[in-house]
Length: 237
Image (cartoon, rainbow, N blue to C red; front, side, top):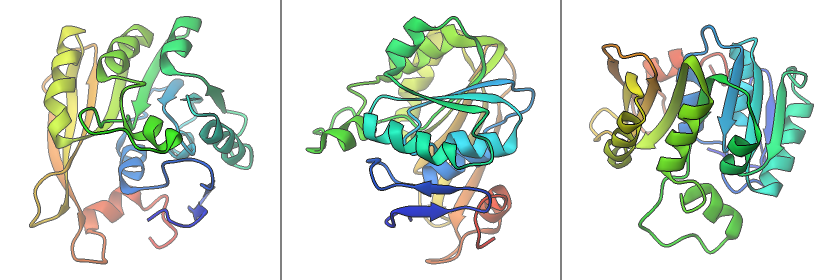
């Protein structure tokens, strides 16, 4: 997925010539899974091509701010949004999350992020790809602590993570008095181990809802549960 210079969804197109990170299953999962109920203000941290911001715009009536540190990606996201049906509700900011958080008094009902998560491997030689994939520019600590400050009273943060990063980010969230509310384990195939976690934290302590989803039922066919979750977006569904 995502090797072409554009990806066509049912209601919008993602051009991805300049952004280092292309359309992929992680982003689509997060955009389809995230709870947008009762959200009037949404913040997308590290928007890349604008994929998740546009998916949430399709699913809600919220005003959405999409923050992206890398200029080529931010420009491309702005262009993708400008030709979408929701261009009046989505704004792109070319800024680091740290700079954005320091400059705003806004509170958000939802903060969503497909964050850079490599921290112990060597950064990619390509600067743009390194920013997109490695968390030297946005650590989990910064993501959680700054999100906690920007969330409204009933606000939530929703992320997709590698399974081996879930424990670390959970500890950080706990220190900031954010409570796990939803968690979905993602495995690529039924016979494979879990590789990703979709997780949502909020300021209200509650018993978390936990489940799992399988992406593929065989080599080339998506599972019924993945089709059900994403059918509003893919042309093939």
